[in-house]
Image 1 (cartoon, rainbow, N blue to C red):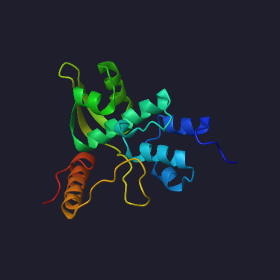
Image 2 (tube, rainbow, N blue to C red):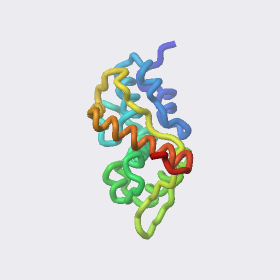
Image 3 (cartoon, rainbow, N blue to C red):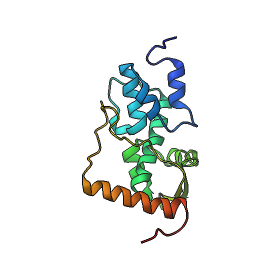
Length: 170
């Protein structure tokens, strides 16, 4: 049975509080609109939303959460102002609620007076684009020899310090 592009079951899949990975669905999708939406949810942030992509309030909230995860992968300390700017969340209560809802992805310490969230450790991360399929809306990450080496070194440090809880070997 073929579903229509943005049917209720597809929207519920995107909005699901337990789901943070969409890459496998994106790789299999043949419908052009659903493919763009899945690309956005797999690799994008709220800054990549295009006018031709229909968004429910629940889809926007989920994409804001995915955008916070992307920020946490770049920065360990997240000022609320940066979350507001990068993720389109306008009030402190919603920012803190979103961070708390992401407890399956990372452990966070909230400092409301300082307006700062500190990621203590990560349990999961966003989908990683590996060139498997052409991106239609999210700009491809620039990959150079140096950036690849830096990414691998960062991953190595993160694996040892945040996941295994020990210092990486030199």
